[in-house]
Amino acid sequence: QNSPFVLTLGEAEGLFSEGEALFIDSRPKEAFQTGHILGAANLPFEEYKEEEALGLIFLPPERTVVVYCDGSECNSSLELAKVLHQKGLIDIKIFFGGWIEWTREGLPVSSENDPQ
Image (cartoon, rainbow, N blue to C red; front, side):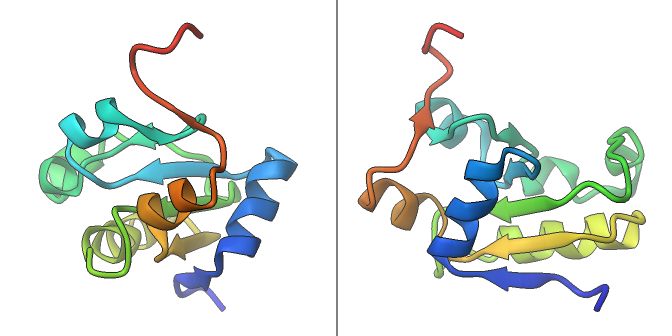
């Protein structure tokens, strides 16, 4: 039960609506700045796969974390989820539909230029 769990779009949207889960975008910073799921944090897998860098990340172990990247062709969400799991996070979910599926459905997004 501690292994990463795959979410459908509906499940991801449900967690988003509840507001309890932290969404983590594993795409490169440039992609994140162009647009991301509203409220998501950016942990680019290419930068954070080094153990030392990941040691700097603090998340409460019981927090639900939803990791995503571009979509089903993208592996970085799965890889980042594995590393976060090794770091002690328990409730990790992967939204394989990612940015592509989220935007296709017109769900809430943000870009770095948005007023907060």
